Amino acid sequence: MESCDVLIVGGGAAGIAAARAAAEHCWGRILLAERGEAPGGVLLQCAHRGFGPGLTGPEMVDELMKDFPRRVELWYNTTVLRITEEKTALLSGRGIGLRQLAFQRLILATGCRERAFGSLGIGGTRPRGIYTAGQAQALLNQKGRLPEGPVAILGSGDLGLILAGQLSEAGCSIAALVEQKAQCGGMARNRRCLEQYRIPLLCSATVSRVCGGAALEGVMIKDLDTGAERYLPCKSLLIAVGYEPERELVRGLEGAEWLQLCGNCREIHPMIESVITEGKTAGYDCVT
Image (cartoon, rainbow, N blue to C red; front, side, top):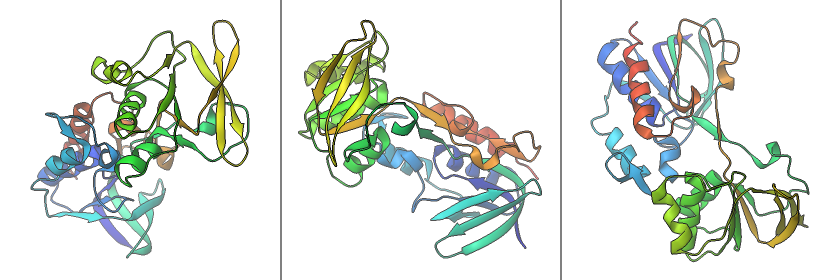
């Protein structure tokens, strides 16, 4: 069976930082498996500035990959399907087929996943036009396509606000931002889009039902204080209600001495700097 000393799963900011640090301290074989076609993870779809010294997501990736150690093997288009307590991994990918790999240390840097529409208990069917905020962000910033407007956005945290601003700038109308809390979330710099583009903000409210046949036609907005509902016409609904760590790959193995979790798969970090710091620490600790 093929083997390596350190296997890093995930090529986002945490995984890149872990690989760089491991290369400084471990003289064995280091392998980073990334399911995408390039390193960067979610940063690649973040066209807004605010990463590191005012960089966009892709620019931040370029900084992280500068002088990347050649001795780290980068396996792109590779998904890790299974991790066992015997310290083996089953990988599948373009160019490698199905391959089993033994390792001495594992760094999990798989990031987080968005809370999806199906987990929210919103009534109605699933018509065309419902996206997670990340899906809409990738559609806009990587594919150059806009969701059909008007757009309703559920969640007024930073990602919801950033999307509202980007979509408005691109000419897409925003029906409203809907926020369960009594006030808008997100940083002040991201809240500016509300006034700049005159975007309606509905606080103490939620989407209770989606309406439409094959395609979305509107949503029912429920006032959480009074219970009253009203209809809001829209062609797209973006779900921006938070994240959950993505660590199912090692469920039941969390206490293993050979395993380290870093970045957003361990806990959700508000800033990229703490993700990078945690990745570095995991890499430094992987001396074999």
